[in-house]
Length: 311
Length: 311
Image (cartoon, rainbow over all chains, first blue to last red):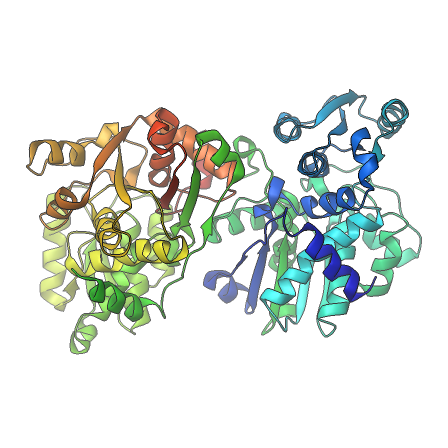
């Protein structure tokens, strides 16, 4: 990827997405001894950065294919994002969801006009069901993260952040499948090459950490981490990007994720999902590496069941 | 008040407060059939618009009085705001609080360096205790709303909103003691005279509504409305301003306040306190008066105990 591709991507999706605000907070700055800039992708369309990647994948699909629709399997934010993006071009999206998916996620896909096809809650059933539907409809598959156009879309988030806040010393973002992290790392290497990029992952879903250590993609862990968006493992496109551009991955305990989630909601007054709290969780465990620095933190999303907050 | 006073006030407090963002949301626009602009004072310093008025009252107090400190009685957001404002000029604030005040409110005053003196939870005890401390210290009293400089400070919120979003058809704000509402009405009459100003009050704390109906200030109701910031009654400064500038007060049921609070948190992804939900609660009950219009809504604050959400 080069700078032109990110600029083109940004111009392509910009009419459809929000330029999200950056918030600061004196209390948190004082607590961590640094200056933090929170890039609020919880305010993004569909409540998560995923709208950027899905929108870009849809807009770069040849128009003659739009009539066949789009398809993905997702139990999370990517499903709603693809439904949203497809609707924006007058197309439709089919989302394959496990039959035990949380009600709010199902409602969210429906709200954006997506068609849901339920399957058994196994990866095999997801893939088989998707292949079956795809064969019938000829829909274009848009994977949640391991896809060039999706990653390019996600890169616009850090691109925006670097325009809004130049000269950051560090950028922190969470790692799930690596789509956001890859986009963040690429945009930063191109538009803020002096900025250090650090990923954060739950200790209970440390597959990306172990992938980078071992040099081989590790499978997803059987994990119950509260950060449900970060349970997936890296893909063959995201992995080499992180190998090349990521300085470090920090692991964070569940307890810190919960404390951070409450702290962010109380001080910044924003609603976030657990996956968005891991970065501040890492600072709660050890903030020595950011002291005195200008730190960008990407708040990845805000889709959480408010009647089931973990505190 | 005239336009120059608001401009002077804005220039005075601007270095100390946040220019808060205005958020929009397609889902809510669709639901209510209008275009809503949410002025997010939950992102204001101390988590509520109160920082504006307190800051202005402190900055317009002669410097030679700063050494005696400031004082108020408050069980809510004004206490923290005064502590914050006093600290900004190197002074101190004493906050008289009822001994049954919620822990988060006490912690908030402490966070901003305020000194707390507890009293019995009656108005008499509050006033007696305050008089006693004031006599000893000579501190400057800054009332929560019935005070010219406080109202002028609050007026900067709607002033900002009208700069950010010109040509609003309607502005909605909650009414407690009338400080925010007076400031909103005054700023709107001066900077957006074509905009209609409507107040919203809980049905269970309808003293302002009844004051306007009867032409006489009605005492606070013995109320348990969830909107704890709106339990107070009008004062002799705020009342005539509302008489002159307010088109209408709408009353809202508790049930709608709760539904609106959840709706705002889920869609806008912001943390708000119950008092900030009454305006959207009014729309849930009847949105016919805003259909097709450009509507400004002032989100007054976000100080809520997240472990005790009412849904």
